[in-house]
Length: 267
Image 1: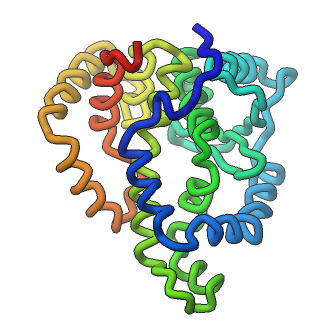
Image 2 (image 1 turned 180 degrees about the vertical axis):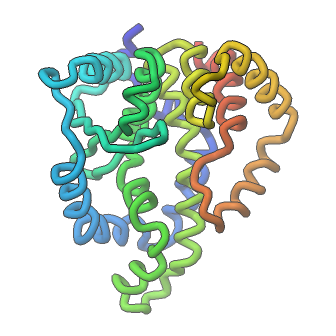
Image 3 (image 1 turned 180 degrees about the horizontal axis):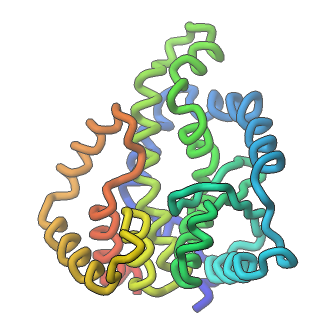
């Protein structure tokens, strides 16, 4: 079903908006990140994508282009981003680029996902683009390890911009933005079963495993996880954001997605 005039705020996860507001409440953050992106990341991303990754087209790999076009049509996205493949042993997708976003999939994603799962993954990445996540996610994915140093260089160590606080707030928001993108992936494929299979494979499902048996236990695990109060879980994840982990726990993501799929908002 095509979702005509879909507004990303209609499916935005509340923790995504809450943590983004906190990040942007730090004075000067958005303008600083735009400057960092323009002067550093824009060139790096162009070199990486055009110089290293392979651009997929309707001529050389129509399977992915057809799925990309379908996801964009369902999510009511007119400007379809270019999509690249990079070498990688793990199943993954990412989005980069602020003014001109693009999607990158790993070779393993193309090899190991069926069309419905790939539709959910590409829908997930389009969700990041539709919600305007690309600027902050590009900085988070590329410069997180040296962000404090970069901010200090750009502000010459003055101006009262708390580099450490920005780093923690950015990492925490990055995790929460995944909940919104998961919802976009579900809206794109409109198949909760495909989303569950995708999450299992992202979480490290063994290639020789019986996915149906794992799916049943995964759903049970997710339902049990729902007993935890999300507010308290979020506080713990905010604490953990000072560490290197940037994605929310797989079971938490599934728990949130199953709950939303059953809600009136989704229907």
